[in-house]
Length: 83
Image 1 (cartoon, rainbow, N blue to C red):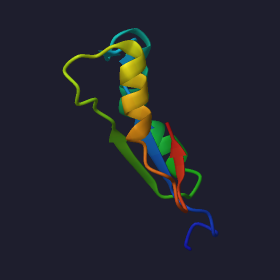
Image 2 (image 1 turned 180 degrees about the horizontal axis):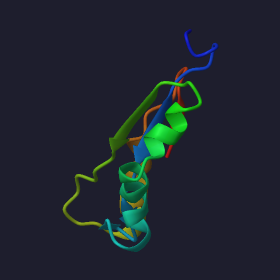
Image 3 (image 1 turned 30 degrees about the horizontal axis):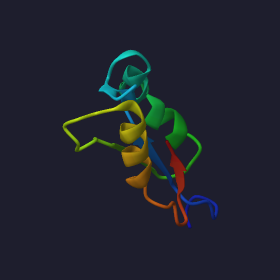
């Protein structure tokens, strides 16, 4: 691997707080992405990918949203997942 044998990093942004998208703490993940998080991590020499995880349910209860989000986070394989 060109990055010294280390796998890449996948940033998985989950922009929800208490089942609400982009409110309160849920605004944090996209704020970090839009303010250079990928560039900071890329400086480590690792390949960086990012994705925003969207909840598909129209009824968003806090626990159900959290569980649904967790089920959609893929296993890392040779990559590090940063959720």
